[in-house]
Image (tube, rainbow, N blue to C red; front, side, top):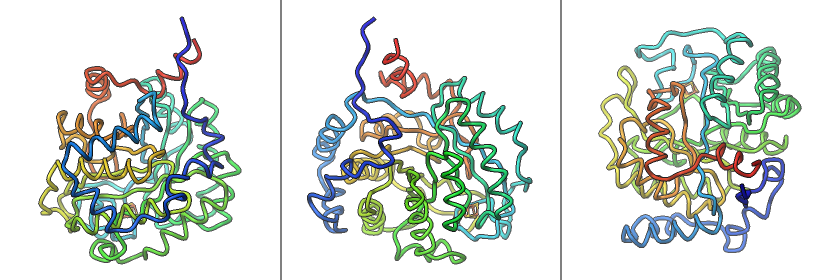
Length: 345
Ligand code: SF4
């Protein structure tokens, strides 16, 4: 069988590729007004622009499957208003200690068998202690040895901790900006926006790739959504992975009564993320189940090209793996894993 060529560059190159981001460098920083103009385009015009960006940057059209595992759940001292893991909220979550290495590796093997290519390990900490880093680095090495890409999200990182994770060969560190700077204080008070930017900077300085996005539908305005995307797109370089969560209000949290964002506005948000960060993997994250198949299909049309797959997410459930595979097959979308397999044939 003839090999299918892939033009997406290997991960090892992605880490150091400044040229991926020349679209932004060449045209200067995105202004909030420019991004609002994209949001306001007629829907068909917005989709046309998305498809141009898609075909120029992801001709294989594959979808990355990332499995998330909560390696330490609940009891978090932070006050993120959307999160049921914050100890101060009366949400229905049981706090657990850090999982054992063996349990994590079992979950990673199952994720790989189900078709995932990335395994993300998340811990509900404000920041890890150095002894936590030691345990997590053992997990990273074990997951890496299974042939999976690795990602971790452990809270704020100091430079030495970022370095230790990089030395364990962690591919991605995930740390969200969550929203725009001016809306941020409406949602979180226990850590500042600059703290988040500092962690992202520490991750970059250590040489790891960045996974950074946020949550929409928390009551922010369109202008604030545009400002959030501008902040992401103007990071230099912009993140390689951009998870966009659709808020799922969780009982017991301050946002439990938040009115849902219009699904078409969510689709527009995905599209604008693609146009402003053309080489990023834009990931549909929390909230997919609530969006349903039709809206998810529109999000893929708007060029989301990564999903969280299989595991329970931080704040909400996720569609079953079989449902995801059925939807992708129905839409004629290949997974990143299946494209790799074709290249190897
Ligand atoms: S989002 Fe993370 S940091 Fe914020 S409360 Fe939840 S677990 Fe803690």
